[in-house]
Length: 581
Ligand code: C2E
Ligand code: CA
Ligand code: CA
Image (cartoon, rainbow, N blue to C red):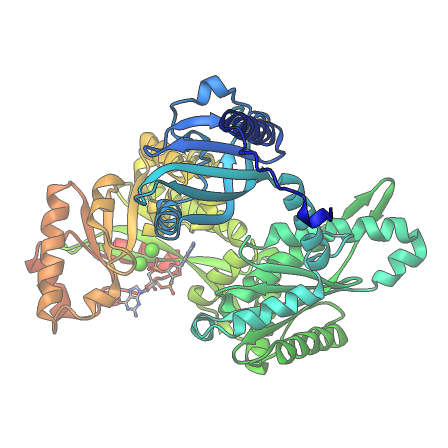
């Protein structure tokens, strides 16, 4: 019989056997899934439809530091680091609910409070009707990867020795700033710094000292600019700085600060080094509308200043350079004038409006230069402030004014008081401004209440605790405080109340308009009334005409100061005026 003719017998598979084998397969699968769940290197969280944790695996316990029992029933927000805002989570949930999944990088927090980055994928599980039954979150800790990435980015964008940005990154950033129309209005300043004769440091002391010096220079540069500004080691001993939102006037101030700080002596082991710099400034958009042009112009300005002066600050624009040089030469002249006692003090009478008698004088500094004649304080006071000479000027005026007032008192005019102007820098850079003033008053043996210190609102308002203390101490001694140039700056009435000033000086620019401008009249008369209620005495400044004087008198203004009575005069002329009244 052929094989084909062999009778076939069919046996039906036993149902019990089939179920058992299916179950065992299922069991195998479940075991496998559980094994995978438990031993997966990624952390897994399963939450129910109410987003309460119902299961977590071992990896999750390891990464987060929480034990399973601590997490069951909790919301996964227990892991949140607070580093993401509401809208981040809102869009994450939106995508998860609408697409069924979400993937991204999230910062979460471990039980010990440490925040770490993770790569997270979220999925929903739905039943037959499409209703969500579970959420599954799978994530892995990517701290190490991030660290490597950051290290690589740092190496790509920074220069190793100084840690500053490198040239490539700087130019890239510079281009991207230039492309934003916003900066065309607010300005960007490019400063190019070259250390003069740096090669000699390397040649004489070796590269080890050269490298250390460059690191110290880099540090000083960083500390001289704001953290928004971009600082780069352009190569070797050259540095480039981009000042963001910076007009040319600011660039000049920063360049001066940089020069001062970089040129302070260096001490490396037993070696002392003196270094000088040349700084070139190019201003966007005036000096070019692309990175190349700006860099070329800044380097050119730097090379020019080095060629002409060996060191210092150079502007790309001739006009700015001229102004800068004028300023520098005025500073040098002022230094010389201070050394040679070329400054003097004049006094402008302050008249009691009802009696029309002189009761006070304001001390105003005068500088007569043999070449240029009288140089107005509005020209040299800002320069004295900028170059740290204001303390010397202030100290001279203070001493002279006290000694001149003592002379008047000696001659019988002991009711006369004197106002002395002080700049904001004198309050913010010194520790003991109150002592300095009090000492000078004591030295001249004057009563404290015959000295008034004139400050502007910027000084009064400065949140500096030091300033507040100085003013408080002075007042406690009996010294009077006057708020100068009121109606120009902030002119805040609440400052008036808060700072307990004794006098308020209405600025000349307001007095100028008093006869022609109705609203100005209302403002001044209201201010005088209000001041009276606050026990503050008002002085009107810059009164030039009888008309102005009569109006102010009608408003009951206490004191008048201005050319209508007299400009500032030498003390001898003031004595003669007192003798006549
Ligand atoms: P200031 O404190 O507001 O001084 C008043 C200025 O107005 C003085 O100018 C004075 O001569 C001028 N003036 C007074 N009455 C009239 C007038 O009727 N018409 C006109 N056109 N001008 C009048 P000066 O002496 O040129 O001083 C200018 C500024 O320089 C002062 O303004 C003050 O801010 C500053 N200053 C003067 N001396 C010192 C000082 O010793 N220390 C400090 N820190 N600043 C001073
Ligand atoms: Ca004044
Ligand atoms: Ca004034």
